[in-house]
Image (cartoon, rainbow, N blue to C red; front, top):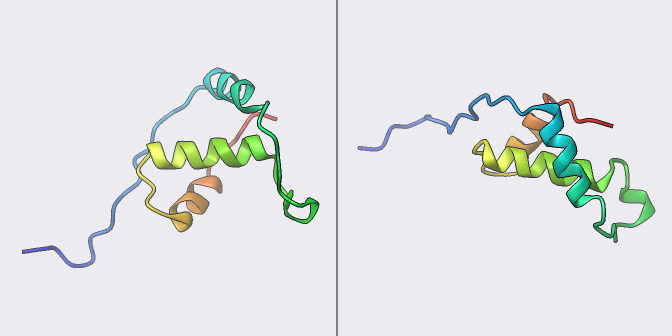
Length: 75
């Protein structure tokens, strides 16, 4: 029998700042085709946040947004 109300938890995982910097370097060359109106955040940060969230078990945009509020990305 399925358990009602049980949500998938995002587990805490420490990612070293140096590892994030290396990943950021890799994605720096991506072309940002978003309109200027939609460029509130750097594309590389959006990609890193989404990637970290999915690795941590995020299953949708709400979970990704939750994690984004808790990450400190290098600038």
